[in-house]
Image (tube, rainbow, N blue to C red; front, side, top):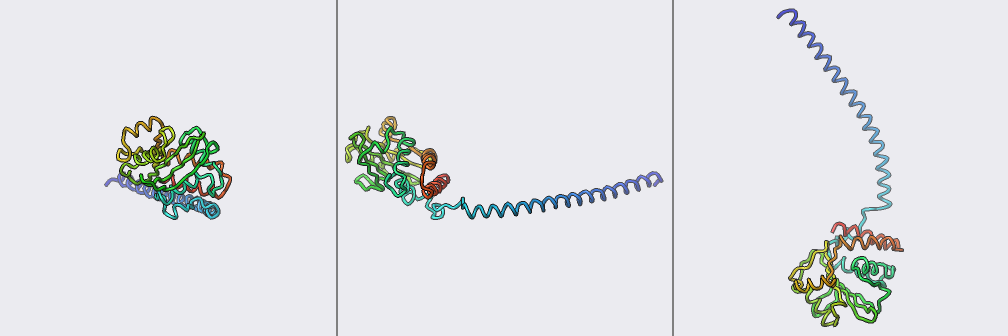
Length: 251
C-alpha cells in the first residue's frame, strides 16, 4: 500500500471518528434539551390535571342517571313514560304547557296550542280491544273532539296490523273523522312503518293528508327538547332534560 493510500485511510478514519463524536454530542445535547421541555410540559400538565379533576368533581359533566340505570333502549321503562311526563301540562315538572306547546307546533306542526284546547287528557299504555296505545292524547278544539296517538318504536318490530288497529280504534271506537286524528309513528330516525303494521293504501292516504306523521328522536325529539330547555325555569328539570338529550344522542 502506498503512502498516499495510507494517508488517505488515516484521514478518513480521523474524519469518521470526529463525525461520530459530533453526532454523539449532537444527540446528547438534543436529548437534554427535549428532556427539559418534557419536564416543563409535565409541570404544566400536573397543574392542568389538578384543575380538571376539580372541575369534573364539581360539574360532573358525564354523570347521567339514564346511562347509570342502563335504560337507554327501554322503550316502556324510559322513553314512553318520560315523554308523557313532559307532554302533561299538569305533571310535576311544573313547566305548565311549555313542552306540549312546542311539541304540537314545532314537532307535529299543528296550528293550535294547549291554551286553545278543552277536556285535554293524556294516557300511557292505554288498553283497548285494538291493542295497547303507547301514548294517546284526547281533547276538544272549538268543541270538536280530536286525538293524537303516538306509537313509540325504539328497536321493536311492528306488530301485525298494529297501526291499522289503532286507526280503527280512533275511527270506530272514538268515532273520529280522519280530519280529527293524528297517528304519530316515532322511531330513532323517523323510519316509516311496514306494510305489516298498516295497509299501504291507508298509509299513503293518511300521509298525504298529514294524519300519519313520521318523527324521529334524532331529527325531531332532540331539537324539540333543546328548544324547550332554554325556557325551563327549574334547574333540576333542566339538568334532567339535558341528561335525557345526551342519552338520545347515543340512541
